[in-house]
Length: 296
Image (cartoon, rainbow, N blue to C red; front, side):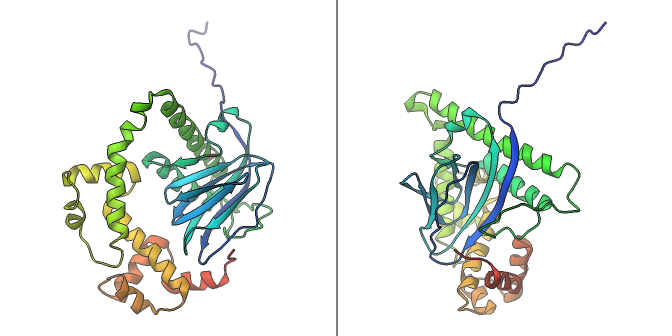
């Protein structure tokens, strides 16, 4: 006799196919050609700002935010500055609840940001690059892709979408005066730290310099920032410096020594080491990739 009762699992959301996997770095003023297709497309802004046009409505989407385009939705992406990077993944999925997060700017907090990073890393292990081909007609699997890699990618995207849907429902069910209260103070702290960092890219600042400008304890600031952003304050500071370095390299106006000086690195060697640590590329390797990439 079987004494154990099984609980069946209902698949609320299931990814059936991947269509494209992109990472674009827009190095000058750009405007997409506009498109409409019969699958879902998720856009995540990794750096900078862009304008997303969806069914003739325009939205400003900034770093740490995203947008979900529904099938057959006419959409486009335009410049809102001189440098931006985006991660875009498109897929087939039958799920009515996706309507809860489509056609609106999506906020990605700590949990969602970490899933995005894992999602992109998993995709790099599974699909052959380059990932900046605009008119990508077919994804090519790597011969040495890890066992279950495609399933891992599927699971991560499903987890991300489910998390976004759950957060949307939670927010909508709360009384207006309580909406976002759990996030409000923490996001205020994060926004202040990010603002200080972005205004200090060309300076040399310490953790104490940043925390001293906020009316919260250093330990609380570090805890909140790591929770919301998935990285430490100084890791984020280094990442933003390197993203600014990418922009400067793409302009092809400065030597690496000049860029190191502008960004207040102690030496060009320190700059190159930090650049490779964060991007897995040397500055010269990145410069070659910029010259060879497709740019809208």
